[in-house]
Length: 396
Image (cartoon, rainbow, N blue to C red; front, side, top):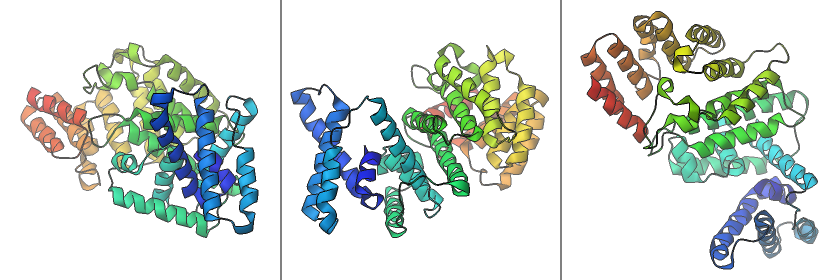
């Protein structure tokens, strides 16, 4: 709805588009419980949002002499036939254009992420701040600056072409990857995962994969997200407690998402380019292929992590590789591999401390392991992770 109205009003009036959508949602909350849900709820919401926008445009005379022409255009589109293939295609196109505008090079990366979550993902400032472990005021300022840059640079919803398309597509995929990761492991709060963020990132990735601008890189990211999202039902038990990968009930993994993941993984194989998304998707596919934890091909996974390390030697990759290394060469080798992270930005990361605790416990050093789990508990993490760390510390 926001993308659709932004196309009609122009991106410089993005705030008005958002306000109109919000007004429609509030009206629904106020009237539907008493009047009942309309026969076509999306069409009702679109109509109310359009009417709200028309009212503001007329009241503020936003475009001077062009105001009535704009009102006529909005009125003409006031009742989109939701469900009609042509209209659905237009709405998807509006949304796609909005994603690419949010990732314009004129907008800094942190602002692109926040703006994409706000406009395209539909999340509020509080949700964005919570997802990215940031202050609400900082996120709000970031959004204000991003919208000002849209106005100042007179950005449009036209799709980029040529080299600029590739550059902006890479930024779009970075945003979706960042969104998915933040949802997959919440930094704090009562939930281990934010499934809404994960599924929104997957939906937007699939939207791009189905468009004419899709590339093997897009399919690789969609494959990765689908295969990872398939595990979400098994990552916590019925009590909301964290379940480690090797202890998960694979019968709870979403088979439909696994099928989607492998479909896009096959599509990502066209061409000769190999990206981080390709390698990460291959790791996720290796896990998905195993019918039980005993059948996980850890040597294959370690080889893939070695390839990933060549593409991206980040501390997170080093930490994740150590998990596979411990399965193949033992906990001593894994401990040695993560020793270099003591001088990295991850040195106080709860997952690094927890991983070291697990390895020390495997080596028969419970006192040292307990110290690691205790240190991990002093860092920021979600409540399910905190309870898991307490259980691990008690087992020492």
